[in-house]
Image 1 (tube, rainbow, N blue to C red):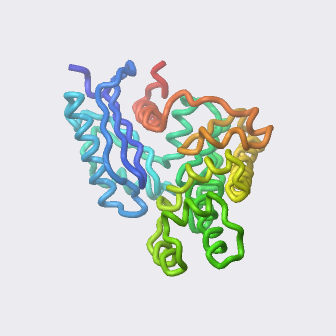
Image 2 (image 1 turned 60 degrees about the vertical axis):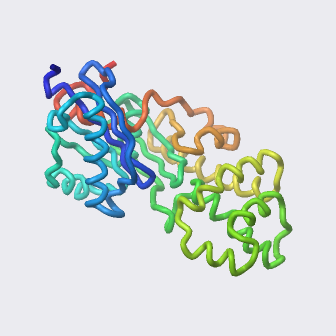
Image 3 (image 1 turned 60 degrees about the horizontal axis):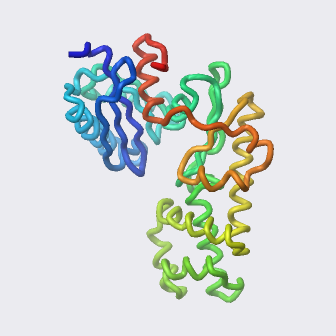
Length: 294
């Protein structure tokens, strides 16, 4: 039986789901699990319950007692130390707990604990870097205030163009027609759709927007070019703060690079690992071990 101090749990929790991974001190994966939404900002108690349930699932697969796990957590919704301290005080059933923002965990994982910057272009968007032990964050304001270039942002811009097309103020294109087929083609149908639409609902249109842009659809191209400029700006801000390289992460990371500005594109590197392993590295460091097991 492995000593309890050598068993580490990584949690990557957010509004789209919770992922858990257990590794031993040498880095071997013992168990993994996936659960539902775990955004502590949206619902603190429900998020913690989902984290524990997902961890239990992973521990069962690993043949381990959940109480032996030293947990590192990268969680959406942590914006200050107060949030992390509240999680530590919640009495979670782990041997120890360290929690931080999900972007921090993703950055730690992407660079194996070394300096570097990440730009996440998923449902939302954010830039985050570690440079000489200092943190730098740009963007990450959420859908209401920012998330420029994100999946939700490009989807929202497309739906706004749909509204103009319904009023006869914009020439329809394939992209406009594709979205109309999903939201409804009348003013009343689009209004009803928008009343309950969430960032995730807008983000669902991102694949068709990029597909249409690649095929020369003028509306798709305008949205993608403007979105790419916003993502480039996040990357450039991190470079200006001292980051030498950038990892582009998130659901749009594979489709944005051709559209990015040249200086940002030159700085792009592949991530060494993901946010779950970044959370495990956080837990290792909290126990006095090197962040990386490599």
